[in-house]
Image: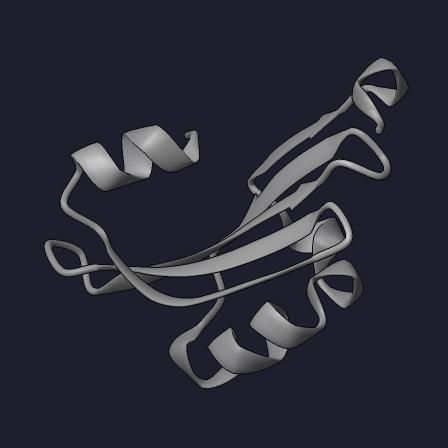
Length: 82
């Protein structure tokens, strides 16, 4: 699910950060009370999403690559790297 599609499902952005082509967004989904951390890394040409447990959400937000193996959506294409 892309960031645009998450917004269409009435998700609320709780946190956002970006630096040097790297973006991380934490969304809350009120209908399901679930969370999603979306990571877009233009340096590597990758995008992935992680659905953390509530007690892990901020840790996943600040250290997404430590949790990348738990991603539910993953896309990587070096041709897209900046």
